[in-house]
Length: 228
Image (cartoon, rainbow, N blue to C red; front, side):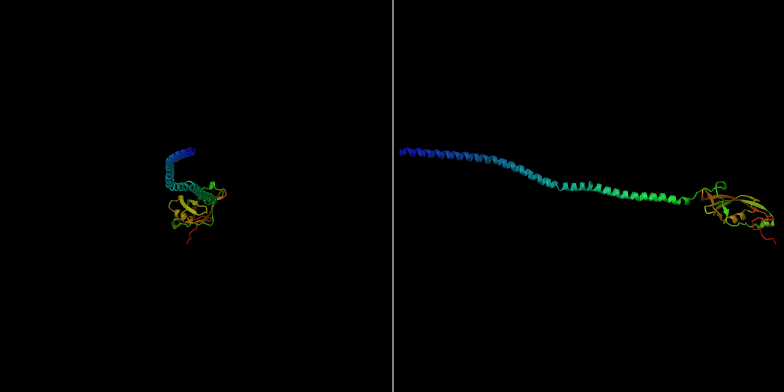
């Protein structure tokens, strides 16, 4: 009985050992299989991680240009609209200055309107106030006419400016020709007149004057030479 019990205990121990060995082998195989599977997974994960790690450097390598591009775009897009409005505001402020200039220029013509010269020399029938001599005008009697006891007349045309000053003068007709023209021209060349007026403002005028030379006319304003 004791031997049988010892054998059954030995068999049980042997079975237990075999069972433990099989269990260990199975666990070892499972563990080894898991390790084998884990290695590809780990290696695959490592590859994925390496790929991801490779991408961040690439992104990091691309990232510097990207910020540069962004900064360039940021400089081109946001600042330029900001600077363009600023520049637009500066010209916008300049146009007011230019607008002020037209206003000044517009105001200047309004101020200079009376100063603008009217090129028209108005005849006597087209003015409201006729020009008048501001002093007595006495032409000199030519010596040749005195010796010849000659009489005659000269018709002058005077162009007067807005101040009444003679701008131009010419002989329209003379009788007798070549006798009294120079005397009449010399007498009226520096004469002064009050200016003509038209519609309440001074204007240029065209004056036609007849100068009569007569030694026997006591009322003549011609400066007659003294008879010796």
